[in-house]
Amino acid sequence: MCVEKSRLRCLQAPIVAQERVAEGIFELRFAAPRLSHSLPGQFIHLLCGDSFLRRPFSIHRAEGEEITILYRLQGAGTNWLSRQREGGLLNVLGPLGSSFASPRENERILLVGGGMGIAPLAFYAERHSHFPTEMIAMAGFRSASQVAGLQPFHRARVPLSLYSDDGSSGERNRVTAGLSERISEFGANRILACGPEEMMKSISAIAEKMNLPCQVSLERKMACGTGLCLGCIVPVGNSENYRRVCVDGPVFDAREIRWS
Image 1: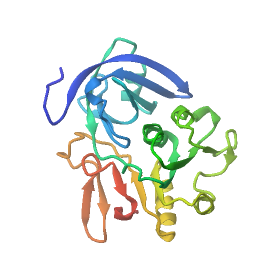
Image 2 (image 1 turned 90 degrees about the vertical axis):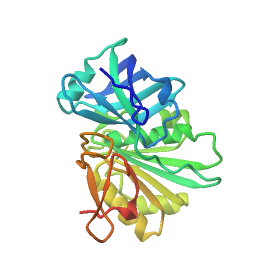
Image 3 (image 1 turned 135 degrees about the horizontal axis):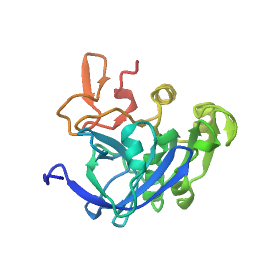
Image 4 (image 1 turned 120 degrees about the vertical axis):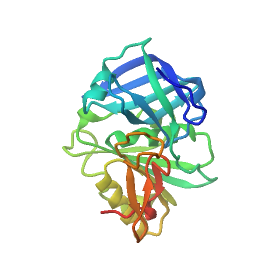
């Protein structure tokens, strides 16, 4: 049962379609008109099967009355989710969390994603494709079999560079390799990043060295998604201060984070 709470926006959403789009990776689309105002960087919280704990998923697309998420199989919850079919109902809480800052006129934005971290960046590229700004994207994956979620970049006509660990798709290298040079060549004046924490730590260091604004979207396990349980805190600043990823984030100024 989904109990309606005005601030939490809890709803039962019918599945429109689900497709396996890469090895162990699925794209799921469901109808949720009340979530059409979702912003790039925000997430939803789903109940998966019999578990009383929800799972967070970045919003990959919000088009018309439908929401799309992109996810990888990595446990009982996502395995249950992958077995759901058209017409089934999802217990959804959202949209939650902060979003990436909207582009400014004539800005040059570099989008850097790793793995499933590509989802909110693809949403950003498509949502702002008609704004007078310029964007390019860099995406890293383990191999060609893991490449997914790139269609929004193509629809938005955002130039995309691919990297893979084994060289089976794009350049054989980490997505952070040559990042400083790419920033200079493109003339970027802002970076948006999402992916593995080590990747974002490296990007944050490069951005700070080049005095470039950088926003990162952090990934954390979340029990409540509403800031009550404090299970997703991250250290910030130079003292013993912490922020909650679910409500203060997931999008942060990279300079805020006290990287380990």
